[in-house]
Image (cartoon, rainbow, N blue to C red):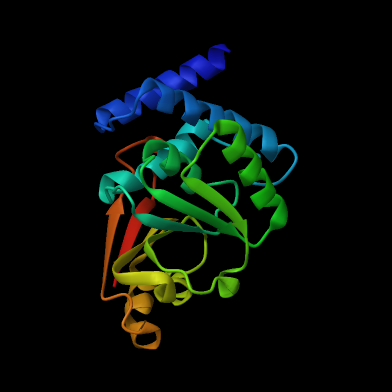
Length: 220
């Protein structure tokens, strides 16, 4: 109980510092999700089991940072590609209840965990679907999200067909990205001109746990 309170207070402090307008009930849901994620992780490998930081910071707050660089809007349709344990989709769905999220992963056990957590938390604007990206047909989105370790060029190849004309791909990535970004831009002719531009923003200033981490936004 003490750890729960301390971690929740830490999340509140970080979010308040960045002027994220969250209610007390949203904070409680985010903390409950972090706890559920840890519990499920003991049964299914959803996140690293050798964490060097609290899950609520390293994974939940990390996911919320996307909203500082891309303000999600009411009615916006968002695809979380390779969601794993619901990251970043579930924290973002809690923080932006008027945005619609589809969480997709090819591993059935991971999606079963997401479906259970979504149901237990009472989240009505997120759906978890067991599917490979190649099997998604006839769907378009305003935004695609990814925390995957796949190369940016590969992610662009996966996602361009799902994006609306003004859409974007937002990734949480680490390491030196200059070559990765260059490769993705050079390959855009193979993906109907996507991406036309790529921006990237260091997030190490938000927390020492995010050293060498960046948010990357690829636009149509």
